[in-house]
Figure 1 (tube, rainbow, N blue to C red):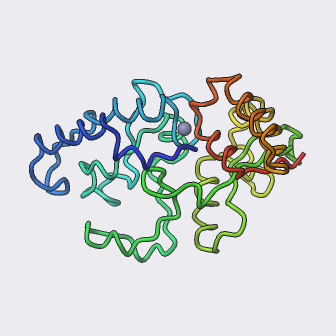
Figure 2 (figure 1 turned 120 degrees about the horizontal axis):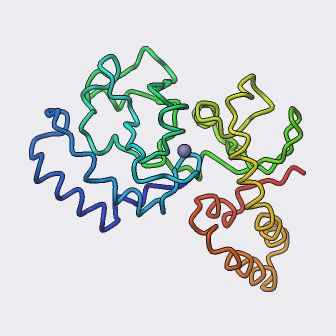
Figure 3 (figure 1 turned 90 degrees about the vertical axis):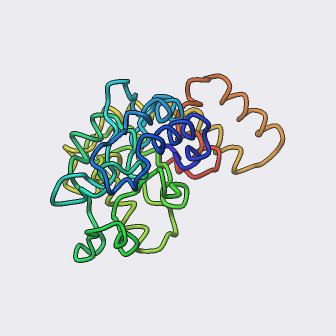
Length: 249
Ligand SMILES: [Zn+2]
């Protein structure tokens, strides 16, 4: 998972935003003439062509998703609001999230922009939420299929509401908790196995550093990160650098 919050300070994103405001001087919820394509390049550049949810590759032709679905019965008033856009791989967008938007209290669903502040989505948005406050990584062997996987899990010690939000996000996208629910078929085993293979050596080295923070271990961790520059593209690396991971093997 990739922390997308700094994108609002990114020069390419700011440029897209200027163009957006020039084309749509009115409030975004007062128009149906969307300009989402203006942001696509900035999104892809910032995420290094990775999906911020599952970290699979995002392709140029993949969609920009509406975090709150734009369907008539859901949030049509946010159809053209850039704050509601997020780049995602088509797998996450079309096969997992679709038009789902779970709420802690479904009776508090917003019907206007003003009411949004009362809503509590059970879905994490890496564009706005602090993912490091909600998640940790876990290197596991699944009890069900004996496969080694890198899964996303709710961070230890968070409050119940945050836990529910993190858990609902994980289940909706099939990116973790494969043993504890009945959604094993929806868990993205191939993807999570691939993540495991890529990151386990780095995580083992990081574990040594966090257990014994000597200069030598710090240098060895830095060396390990430099060995595979392609890993730097992943948001997972930030979790590992922060020590927000567990190796349960
Ligand atoms: Zn994805």
